[in-house]
Length: 417
Image: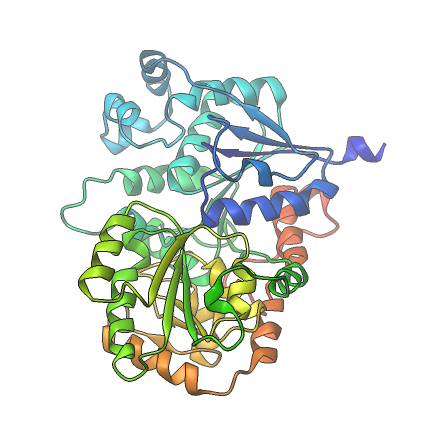
């Protein structure tokens, strides 16, 4: 029957925090659901703000944890683990794997359910799932997804780093059936740092339902700063963390206010640097013109009504918010960080690219973008290139090549992106 020919796919994560990688994976899940017989979302802990966003029809399985001593004992059985010179005690107690004590319950799940393919994302999870397959000794196809710029995220190549992720990744990534990078920049970094290349390495940018984003952009908005006739708003969004470098954006905004005293800044998101950023807002005398309102459900509507959207990050994988802003027709400015913005903005043709951490360059680019004609059509057209349907089809071809009409031909570079 058709149901018997469709594959059983499992997606493995620790939990579902509010992050770009997890949000993008939820979209992939929704797209995969009609193509598979069964789709399991396997979580060590069934928690996180994105739980209520899991599409209906996906079975959520919480596997829980095992005692440290039991995990440590089984880690010693892993082939080639000792080659990297890392003690099992350090592996169990450290942040590797992110699945931590969920490793052995994951092994039990794989042996019991025998999925045809397993997809996971982010470096610690990728390593842990690779371990789990080796311990379970099953035939499942293992696909690892790298959603961030690997060398920047892990400190790879930096002198004083104590991060063992690069050592483990060099051993275990080549043992996967496929590795997916979310941008060409991420893929090139993996090629350089881990010696990965096609046919193992593939590029699949995140996919978006552009029509749904446009629909959300037209909805009503409660925030008074976005009402008709109000001064222009500069918008940014992301986790309040050092990676997003909102400090540089705040200093750039202070510079902008000297010549444009009416302009306002809104930074959407939550994170560990909220206190630090609020203190900086106060110190710079910007309390009346800057808002950090937290998470927002009407982000698309705010994007559509903003004068410019700014991505000030130190590094990215493939920044979702940049595509979403473009889908709303909002002019954008981004740092030329590794990686994603240069690819998305076609080398700066669709929006200025500025050096990371350069306050004056960022301020100048924002002002220039606010003064330029608003070419919403070109931005929406580019956003449509990253369709969810295309991304989902490519994921399915990588996960289940024997179930598709043709073998996947993706590799590097990915044409048409």
